Image (cartoon, rainbow over all chains, first blue to last red; front, side):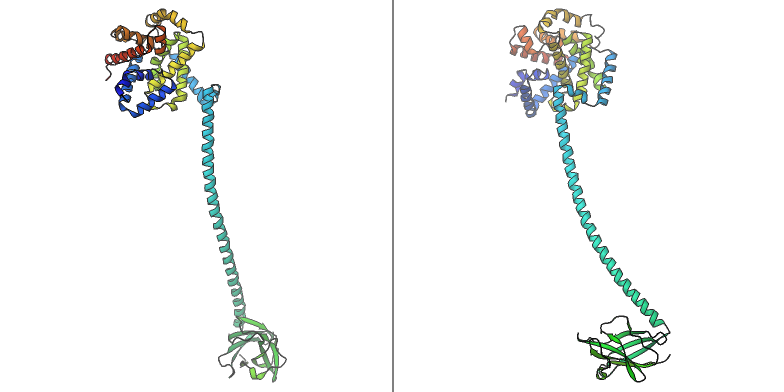
Length: 268
Length: 160
């Protein structure tokens, strides 16, 4: 494009005078963006126009200013609803409204997604914590039960009324070792295993008390015993305690050949 | 906004008053113009021209719309030309004529044909097209004269 010719045509003056159609204005604005020389020329034209019109100015009366700013204040407080009477403003109002709606929708979606993510995180954290909590509760119960058992056992083993009878391994099973806590006055008997071998499903250990040379059944038990096991009551007069291996459920008289441990009552 | 008003209200009223020719009505329009400026200031794009040019166009359009919508008509404008010119630039508007000092001196220094276009456009509210029609001048001639006049004014107003 010949910039000189373009300027000479007077189109920039017409542009500054506001005498171009929308289409022509758009054309000029496009050219202005492309050619800095046009911008420079337009700036000079605009400045000339401004300076000239400043000289040609007519001072409005003071009341005009007061009225104007009162009107602006009123418009400020009424927002833009007033403008709805003008068709082009209506359009821009709806355009604004649409833009605002879209903005709100976008922001809301983003927030919703964000919160959904956070909610999911929170939910999985919560599930994990609940599971952990249950585990801890279980552990606590187990420990508590064991502690209860130990406390109970301790009461018995520490009670002087209970006589401890240590039963040592026989030649059948020299490594075995077990104890009986026997309260002669209350007849209570508790068994504690230090070392007894594991038995097959068909067999069980059976505890016997020897009273006046005769074996008396004191109950059966399995080899895998932790803590004290309450056995059948044994009246006073027992001199010896012994354990034999019997068929599951026990027998009325011991099979002496299978005797595992044996110990005499030592009066404290 | 107050700065804009203090700075430009006189120049804009000058433009509006020369198109409307009635003080009361011109001031009413001036108020509408500033309300519009206040309302649309966020649409002003500095890359498309000076702020004054933007405000000037709002003022001109507002005033011209008024002349078209009401008792104003082209014929009336033509009939009253002589009276109004003299009115505005003589004594009837004296109470408003504050910043007009020096205007006549500037205009006098322009060659006759250039003074004509400037006078009719800026002081009488004609568009270039209206001038061409009204005075049987080719539009291109009006544009060229306007361009030369603007160039001359640039020198007279010492704009570099």
